[in-house]
Image (cartoon, rainbow, N blue to C red; front, top):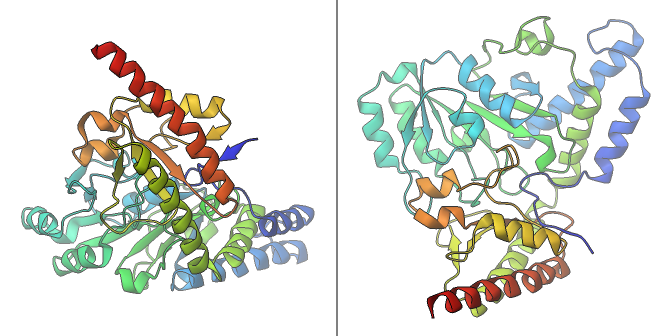
Amino acid sequence: MSVYLDHNATTPVRPEAVRAMMAALGAVGNPSSVHGAGRAARKLVEEAREQVAAAVGASAAGVVFTSGGSEANALALSGLGRKVVIASAVEHPSVLKAAACHLLPVDADGVAQPAALERLLQGLPGREVVVAVMLANNETGVVQPVAELARIAHARGALVHCDAVQALGRLPVDMAALGADSLALSAHKVGGPQGTGALVLADGAFDLAPLIKGGGQELRRRAGTENVPGIAGFAAALAAALPGYADEAARLAALRDGIEARLAAALPGLRRFGADVERLGNTSCLAVPGLSAQTAVMALDLAGVMVSAGSACSSGKVAPSAVLTAMGAGDLAGAAIRVSLGWTSTAADGEAFCDAFLPLAARHAEKNAASAA
């Protein structure tokens, strides 16, 4: 039996998205063409644009379709016209590597500190600054105080870009409530296809310098023929995921809490990152001191259980987590694994993970005891 517990990397494509994509693939027409087939393709794109906008309380005119969340982050940081970037120290690599960033520190729970943002902005020209802060962390699930940080940033004339890739479908995402000027989204985190995402711009922020230049697609904000099947699949996944997301989030939180309770009862030294603050109900970031993440991920994979360590966008390597390092985790940054649940996860999956992980941790403890003796 194979157990998949890496939904924060990508969640299985929903059947509704598959059907929408197949229908779009069966059609012909470039959405920029003016003939009937082109207009039919354009209709699919514009209907999807309306659905993506509605999902985050935005205007359809502000939605720019991209190849995914990483491109959306890069487009925001390069295209909003601000020369200075402040980014939380636990941002996704697509933010931290997109520009030279002033780092906004986080506390031991991984929460960005508003007072620290105040101090950073005092030494910078606010109207040249964009503050990048994610809504929910991809490794720990920790939720950031985006609305409070946005109030501070806007008071100094700065813009706010929010990476909401992990939050969409798991938390309420409302641009006005967050105070975000731009928002990055990705289809494959909600059961849509890989390779499709969006940058959503708030009213008043529709001017955007393109990262990819060429044709006039996406109101001249992103050149290249739109990925019509991917965009249709994105919209279908949102339509399937969002109506019952609160009940689903509660189900996954109960499953996650059961896993953590069983492990904690058997492993007194277990560390659960972000457990004392608000976090996504589907995410558990765990470490047993001395048990390397690489060993744990490989051993679990051999046992048929798939989890990850760190960001899935790190070229497949298992290395100490930059997120946990920023949180001051020390050596535990190289020991943490991420268990992330999704719409296909069951109680049996949680039991299978525990059944595989507990003997691994026990063998590690015995080996350490023998070495110490």
